[in-house]
Structures are given as C-alpha cells and as structure tokens.
Amino acid sequence: MVAPGIKIDTSLVEGLTEAMDKGVVCSNYTDPEHTWEVLKNFKGGTALFTQPSTPIKCGGAPQKIMYLADDHFRKSGVRQKTKVVFATPGGVIFGVKPIAKTLMEVINRKDINVRYSHKLVKVDGDKRIAWYEITKDVKVGGCILLEDKTSKKDVDETINYNPKKVETVKDNNLIGIKFDMLHLAPPQSAPDFIKNSPLANDSGWISVDIGTMQHTKYLNVFGLGDAAALPTAKTGAAIRKQVPIVVENIIRLAKSEELSPNKYNGYSSCPLVTGYGKMVLAEFDYDSNFTPDQN
Ligand SMILES: Cc1cc2nc3c(=O)[nH]c(=O)nc-3n(C[C@H](O)[C@H](O)[C@H](O)COP(=O)(O)OP(=O)(O)OC[C@H]3O[C@@H](n4cnc5c(N)ncnc54)[C@H](O)[C@@H]3O)c2cc1C
Image (tube, rainbow, N blue to C red; front, side, top):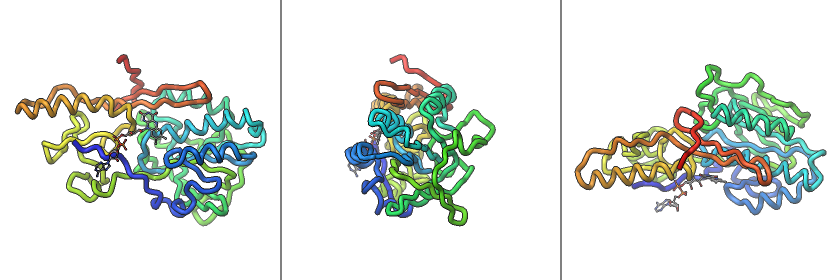
C-alpha cells in the first residue's frame, strides 16, 4: 500500500523559494505561525490570496484563510483600508455548483475582488509583486476544485469580479499585482521517488484504478491518498472513504478472491471556513455532484 503524500515544490514558481515564509509572504501549508504574525502585523493595503495551477492538498485551504483574515481585519480595524483580492487560475470559485453559489454570497458579503484565470508564475518578495500569466486554460495541471465540469464554457467571462483599484504592473504578457501581504498555497507534486518510479503515470502520480485504488500495472500494489492519481480533491476526508475499499480488496486478494464490487466514487469534502464560527461543508464526488455524507 503506497501513501506517501504530496511534495511541496516552491521551485515551480520563480522566486518563491527565496520569498516563502519571509516578511509579508506566508502560507498555512508551510508555516501557519508566520501567517498569523503577518495577519496581526498587517496595517492595510492589498491583501492578496492566491494558489498555483498544480493540484494541491485541500484545494479550499487558500480560500479558508482569506475569509478568516477578512474577519480578523474587521476586528483589528484595518478592513476599511484594505482590498482583499483572490487570484485563482480557475474560472469558478469552486467546482461544485451549490457550493460555488454559497461561496459567491460570501465573496459579495465580504466585498472580495476575485481575479480568475490568473496563473501564478513568479513571486518577487522584495518588491512585493506576484506575477501572473492570464490563461483561460484551467486544465493546465490545475486543481480539480477549480473546474466547472458541468459548464460548457471553460472559464467565467468575468475575469475580474467585483473589481478593486489595486496597483498592477505589466511585463510583456505578465501582469503583476502589488501586495502588502501575500498568502499562497505553494505548488505541489508527487514525491520524487514516486515520480521517478514505474508506479507513476505520465503526470507523476501513482497510477491506480479510480474505483478500486489497485495499481493499473502491479496488481499487488494499491495507492491512495494525496499521491494517488485520483481525479478528486486531495483531502483526508477522501482517504476516509478510500481506505475501507482498499482494505476490503487486500483481504479479498489475500484469499485469492475477486475484488470487491464496492467502488470508491471520488467522495471528498472540504470544510470551507467562511469566518470565525462559520463553515460550509462541501462534499462531492468524481462528477462534482453535491453529496452530503450520511455516515
Ligand atoms: C492547510 C491545509 C488544510 C487542510 N484541510 C483539510 C481539511 O479541512 N479536511 C481534509 O480532509 N483535509 C485537509 N487537508 C488535506 C489533508 O491534510 C491531506 O489530504 C492528507 O493529510 C493526505 O494524507 P496522505 O496520507 O495521503 O499524506 P500525508 O498526510 O502527507 O502522509 C504521508 C506520510 O508518508 C510519509 N512518507 C513519505 N515518504 C515516505 C517514505 N519514502 N517512506 C516512509 N514514509 C514516507 C510522510 O512522512 C507522511 O507521514 C489540509 C491540508 C492542508 C495543508
């Protein structure tokens, strides 16, 4: 059973390794205590929240901290002199329609500027600029939560939703957003020893059947969790539903029986904290159906 998790790879965005967790650049993925320091010291300006175009664990986490930060800024009295911006490579706020509807209400209530189709390519920590390529191809290795699978359109036409006057700079085809604090989810990939092994598919993830988690080539191997090539959000909640299927199948194989008819349906969930004491529990399957869990 192979479940080695995911690798945080700051080298995939130019300048990020140098900028990460220093000054006003922070991430709950690597140093949440530094995030808290940045939020406490923030005196107003542009608070930029963003995420990469690679798959990441808990695709909702880059939003959760933004909603909490907004609440904190209201408490600390700096919200009125702050523009909160969410720059995302995707074309929707969330890939599950009923959840997206609720989250857009939160975005409106909190007066957040959402910039879609923004693929983070460079971070200049010293000059406090996040550089983006504007791309409508939301499937470039993107996070599953950012795709609207039910829509024929690839991307929302409103690239700049609820626009705010934020200082931007241009360099050829790149747009730089100047920030006074930046929270980001760093780019992520499968661990190298998986990527460089025969277990990997072309994208580096463990190549498994999406219903049984059995390896597509080595039938005595099962892969699960963040490192597995499962087209759903990478969460602990997903693993909770993968494990019983894998265990049942291993027991059956040990007895030389057929694999179980029970299949993993892609269940994953994301508790999207929308403020202090408030949360939307997004639960969904491979087809982005909203699937509240009964167990
Ligand atoms: C900020 C943040 C918020 C999140 N919020 C949620 C949430 O609200 N709900 C939710 O369900 N999920 C959430 N997640 C995601 C969740 O934490 C992960 O999806 C989950 O931990 C993945 O489990 P895993 O077992 O695949 O990998 P991991 O938890 O990373 O475990 C992998 C283990 O394998 C070990 N390992 C790696 N390589 C080797 C090796 N060669 N030999 C031996 N051991 C090895 C590692 O040391 C590690 O202990 C969040 C994640 C983050 C970062």
